[in-house]
Amino acid sequence: MSIGHSIHPIEVFVELLRGHGVGSVADVRTSPCSRFNSQFNRHALERDLQAVGIRYLFLGEALGGRPEGDRFYDHEGHVLYGRIAESRRFESGLSRLVEQSEHSRVAVMCSEENPAGCHRFLLVTRALHGRGVEVVHIRGDGSTQRTDDVDAFRGWSDPVYENVSLLDGSVCSSWRSIRPVTHRGSV
Image 1 (cartoon, rainbow, N blue to C red):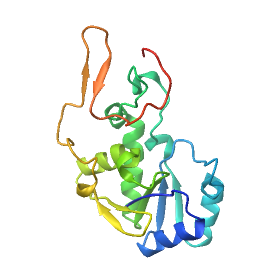
Image 2 (image 1 turned 90 degrees about the horizontal axis):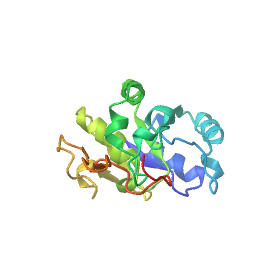
Image 3 (image 1 turned 30 degrees about the vertical axis):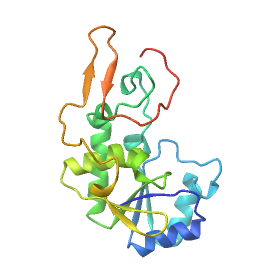
């Protein structure tokens, strides 16, 4: 499963998790804090989930959408998800996630309510999909959405996800963040 914490009060968020039988939350935010919704700062969230019997697992260092290192960004500042997915750190984090799912129902969590624009869908769900793992997305109103029904689900079967320009060495990729996440010139 996947879920975005959005702007929910913690009680509503917990009810969304409970309503779908979630026993563990895998936080995949690179920086597990929220300036406007402090209930989702790492330590507050971990404490509140533990109080209701839901395990908190931080995987943002391995599965986060804003890795350190210029090689993970194109010349416009978009994150190159294919490069992240090939990294040892990501593979290790994905293995931990799959292992945890063998013990309890896990919800991969980031901040965006709509999975279509979030790395938990565009990177993590895509990598899980490639392993044959089906992910269902919990929406803010409590409904669920299958991966195949998310608007951004297209082109995942294309094995070529990156092309490098012979002229300037810039990278063009269909497997990247929707928005630039950093102000960069040429990488």
